[in-house]
Structures are given as C-alpha cells and as structure tokens.
Image 1 (cartoon, rainbow, N blue to C red):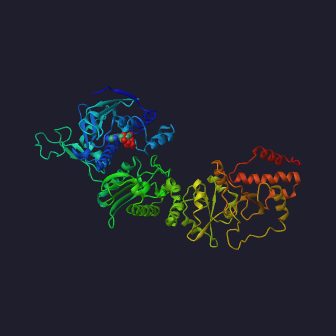
Image 2: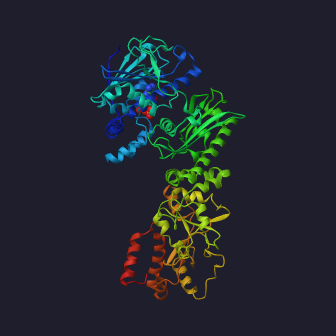
Image 3: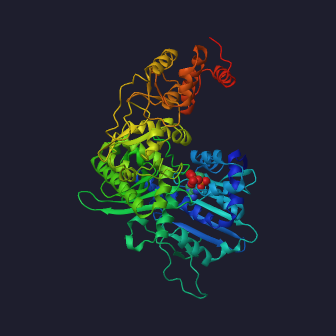
Length: 637
Ligand code: ADP
C-alpha cells in the first residue's frame, strides 16, 4: 500500500457540504437514494463500456448494488460492481465540484439559510449527502479496466480535507462506507433500509440487495449464483430491478414515476406531468417524457447549445444523453428516456444526426411533448401556469424554429395583458380572441423592456379607453418572437406603437391633418427636425401629450437600445412623434413665444422618450429645460 496523500477540498465543496448537512437534516434519509442513484449510474456506465470491451464484465456479469450493515462497527456500506474510479477520478469527482449546474447553484445562493435550503431541493446533492448521517465516509473503488493493485481508498470527515491511498482491491466498482453518527442507528435496521429502498429506489434498473435475514439454523438453500463479496451472506433483492419504462403502465404508481424522475434529473423536485408510451410498428421504442416543475440548474435549458435531459437507451442499455438529437431546441426542458429496440448498439453521435429512425423518434417526441402540454393546459391551470412561468420563454423559440407546429405552440403561450392579472403572464391567444370586440379585427400588443413600461405606454391609451385589450410583452425574446407570429387564428397581430393607427374599429379611419392642427404640427416639425421624422396628430393618445411611433417594420426602440448595447450598428431610423392636440401642454405650446416654444417642443419629445423607457442623450440639458418651463424663465436660444 502506498503512502496516504492528503488533499484539501475545493472551496465550493465546503460550501455545498455545509449547506447539505445543515439544510437537509430533516430529510436525512435522502442520502441513501443519492448513493444508490450514483451506484446505478456507475452500473449503466460499465454496461456501456462493456459493449466495446466484453472483458470488463466477463468475470462478474450481473451488475448489482448491495447494501450492508455492520452494527458493531456502526457502518453502512453501499456497494456496486459498476465502472469504479481511478485515483485521478476519485480526486476529481470527490474533491471538486465539476458540474456546471452545481456551480450555478452556488452562484444562486443568497446566504439566507432558509431560502438556500429551498434552493438545494432543486438540484441533486449527490455523494456529499452521506455526511448528513455519517461523521466519516470511506470510499473504496477500482476502475473496471484497471488491475487489482490499482484500487483506491478515499476517506474524509467532511471538514476540509480528504485522504487518498492506493489499495489492493479484488472487486471492480465502488463501496461507500458510512461511519454513522451517534443517533443514526435506524440506518442499521434492515426493515428501515428496505422501506427506504422500496420507497425511493424501486425504479432502479439493477437489483438492489440486502443481506437476507434468516432464522438461526436455516439451511443455505437458494444461495445466490453470483458470489457476493462477503462469502457467507445470502442476498435478497428488494426493488423491482427492471427499468421502470419497461414495466406495464398500470403497474407503475405516480410515486414510481416521480421517483424515477428524481433519479434521471438528479434533483429533488417533482415533475409536473409525464407521458409514457410504447410504439410498435416499423420500428419499436418506448418513450417516457417528463415536464419539469422547475428549471433545473444543470439541465442547461437556458443554453440552446448545451442540452441535456433526454437519455437514449438501446435495448435497455444507456447509450448517451441525446436531447439534441431527439428533441428540437425549444423543447429542451423535456426530460426523460427513449429506449429503442432497433438502433445499433454501437451508434455514435454522428450516426444519430442523420438517421431515419432517429428523425422519426424525434418527430414523435415533439408531438408527444406538445400533446402533453396541451393536456396539462386543459387539466390543471395552476400547473400549466408554473410551466409557463418557467419555460414559456423557451417555448417561444419554437415559433421561429418549428414552422409546422407554429399554431400549436402559439396556443400554448401565455402573456400579460391590459385585461390580465397584473404582470402575471396568464392570458392565452384563444382567450384574447374570444374577448375581442365585435368590430375588432386585429390582436394588439405592445413590446417594452418591463411590465410597467408596457402597461404605461402612451400608445395604448386610446385602446384602453375603448376597452380594447392589449397584450403586454416585456421579455427580451418577445420582439424576436413577434417577427414570427404574424397572425393567430386568422387574426393579424399588430404592434400598437408601429405604423399608422386607425383606431380600434374599421370605420375609425385616419384623417388628413386638419387645417386646425396644421400650424401646430408645422411649428413642432421645424423645432424637432433633428429628432423625429415627422409630427402628426394621434388617435392613440388620451391622457398623454405625445408619444413616439415607428414604421410598421421598424425595430422597436427598446430593441434598438439592446442591439446598440450589444455593440451592433443600428441604421438610424427616426421615429414619428404623435401628438395629442387637445392636451393642455400643446395648447400652451401653440400660444408660446419662440423661446418658450423651443423648450416645450424639446420637452415633449424627451417626455415621449422617457415614457417608453428610453435614455435621454443629454439629461442635464433636459433638467435645465424643465426648470426653465417650471419657473417660467425661458430665454431665446
Ligand atoms: P453527481 O452524481 O450528481 O455528478 P456526485 O457528487 O454524487 O454528483 O458524484 C460526483 C461524481 O463522482 C459522479 O459524477 C461520478 O463520476 C462519481 N461517482 C460517485 N459515485 C460513484 C460510484 N458509485 N461509482 C463510480 N463513480 C461514482
């Protein structure tokens, strides 16, 4: 045996350890589920590697998980004969936090213990959860492709350091030995462990075994064929030990489905809904698709290029995460399993890319996911709202990505509106259409960079006064989205701050600028010629003196700002200033002398910029101007 090496945990590990131990104590039994889940993953990985190298499992082919208690030493051992770890892997996996999801989780921590405890429930706590019940963890492991003298022992009391030593280890795979804390003796009881395994880990596809409790004098009939490590023990399998999705639907409880979901997504929160299907025909496969209740930290759903969550199995063997191949990007929040009977086991990512069977499965998974969402929207408004709040913006991408399903996707979107529930995005396009006024022909919306800016847009005043509903869009993606959503259910969508506005109903036609308003318009146009393309009386305004309006196809002003911030060149496209000639401020402008008129004109424009959430080019000049107007001390420029 070589020397023992000491290593310090990465700082983040300390942070996670501390949180896990302190915030999860009330659910301390979850450690077992987490360790079994890791053991199951290790068996999956070995089975995959054995496809290319059958030697790896030749001597011991039945992959399994064994749980063993030693009441005298007060240890509980979770052992698998899966892939195991090399020395380097041990240090990397059990000393650092490599998962980007966990890093993101740490970034999200607020330092408020209660809020953080809530957060931790959303991601898998994994191996370190052993420290909730143990004051020391020892891991003995050997990678399946290494020799017996290259085993590794890792050990730590969780307080900053861990030790690693090379050991002789006959069996491949990993044993996690928990030295239980004072008072945790319940985890030495067979009945308790059996209860936890059947409750939380029944869906694990490999046998999970406990030592058989046998009355004294029992003969040893039925001894297991595969020799367990401790020779005189006989073992009893306590879980179903078949992949959950292969079992008949009517034999799977909701709890089983939720338990399996927690296993595959490495989290503790539950799924909102799922769909489990077996397809037989020109090809056969099973799919089990889940809609998550929360946006997981590591499902990377916010990143189109790094998708995860849909696992591809081929004839029960885990092959790879194939979300990118099996689902379009806008459905990347869907988690689950696809198990194909027909794809070749040695399939590569490249081969998946243009395989006919795969594209059929992808089309079916897309349809099933949308069906699942349709059903959720009908069956459970509250859960659907939760879905919408978490993933509605991801779904919007589908309008540009999946032309054939555009109408279906649009139907699933929810928006805030002038007739909705505050900033809550809960109004569907169907609801909007149903509430449209008898003579209303278009769906009105406004885009802005916040709910308040959208709700307070001067451009929607006239519509509000006529009781016409306006959708309030204030997510970054919305401006992009409306570029793909030209109509719904035969009704065109129209931005209230773009193009000429004729009023809500057809007979409300735009009129020529009347003789009465012409002097006012001409005077303003002259004073604002560097800032606006034109000035015209408005039909949009009721309370506000003025607002900015763009051409039908121009980029919204807040979008122009975003693009500029991101360093893009935006072609100068001046807006139109629409005015409310009846407003007191415009009356005052009409009566003002030249000096005061100049201040008032510029202020009108500046107000309109501010009202729509924009930044003034010269705020100091604006303040001086406003003060001159307030104090009545305008001077000729
Ligand atoms: P997670 O499983 O969520 O990645 P963990 O902290 O539970 O995080 O485990 C970290 C890593 O340690 C795993 O990703 C895996 O590579 C390795 N590991 C943990 N348990 C085992 C095991 N029983 N066999 C092999 N590798 C393991």
